[in-house]
Image 1: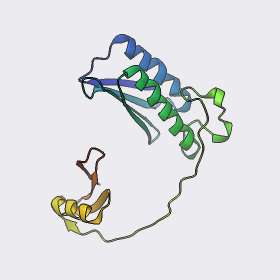
Image 2: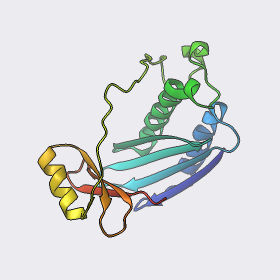
Image 3: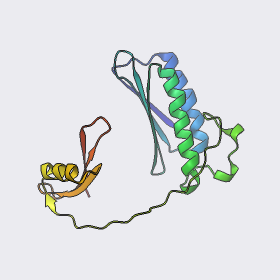
Image 4: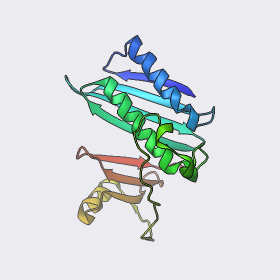
Length: 177
């Protein structure tokens, strides 16, 4: 597994870098050699550190984001979340995990095997996309009370998604095909 470590407003010391590489590499048992792990360490405020871990393998993404006062604690918690995601979805994709073979003593970063619930689509909706401006899409998003709104951008002619972020601001995704 290739491991990339980056930082923003935070200095990753050698001991933390070594620990990240050692612990993230343990997750290699779940992925092929083509997997790439990206670890981002950020300083959120004077007393809060944020760690983002994203692993790409065979077209699948596994991601976790942890904020606390201790970057070392963030690492363990982030990797635990990743491991639970791998176990939950591992047998649905091409990772090296089968739900029925997981035992608690084989886990690296979690204490118990998570409960499995098969996700399913419970609602299907179809509607026609009309070319509108980003500003009109934002108004429609607020008026409908949804967390996202899909539309065709009047200027670019691409499908866009405008969404409400957890911080209260908005994000825009533009699909280019």
